[in-house]
Length: 185
View 1 (cartoon, rainbow, N blue to C red):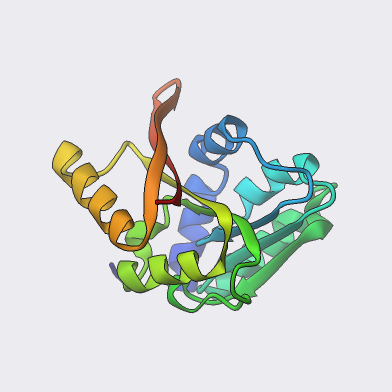
View 2 (cartoon, rainbow, N blue to C red):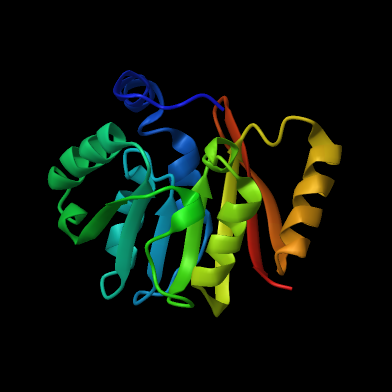
């Protein structure tokens, strides 16, 4: 993984900031109206903006380590009728600025490949999730490496105490992604 810069963030926002995978995954999962939802590697905040009307009594937190990406996310949230409800925090996946066991759902939409230390990031996810909480992973086009990579991901999740409860391929037009919904093993 290379370091993200302001230029990388601008390129990503222009090309993938409102990418269909965010919408497809958000629309495919159930989330309680009072849920605490954290999007790790939130990018432009599109997943949380999409979810906001369905979580009127909850808390929505976008976490991203790239200052320019957070600036873009804040700009886009300011233009959204529910965007004022989203908090944005600068932090890497490996150091989530949240208390233990306070989160109902963690999103990692096309971001897990960008974490500097995936195992440390997953430990943080497990730390902040409530006992019945869920991690929702999405990977555009599925994992490189196919079935072997998927088995390795499932094994890594298992070592962290998470089990894949649902695996689903979502598609719209030429866009295809795989979504894994994980909970306590």
